[in-house]
Image (cartoon, rainbow, N blue to C red; front, side, top):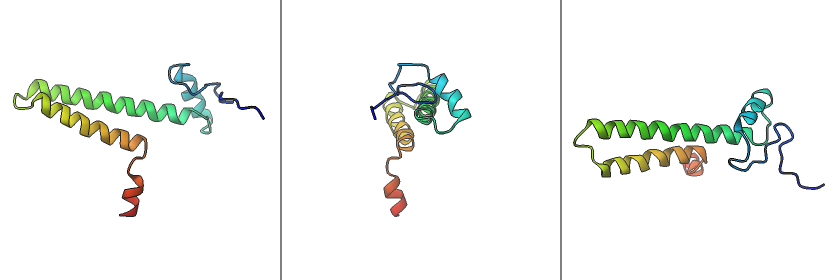
Length: 98
């Protein structure tokens, strides 16, 4: 059997930016076994989380004089690390063994 990178359900190839994720989302609703749809949805959730964190921190930076650029960068790193950990299941083994 020859390797075929294309999903049989949505025809996506799995390469970022190659095709619209919309076809994967719509296929995923109809069939949760879509090869790339689950990954695209998880990436979209991660990206949205990063946008939300960035917006909140920028608003805080604009409103609070005592909140510095250094505070912003530190908080941004902390919050985005949490999002990446959740998206890629980092540290789950450690948490489960506690």
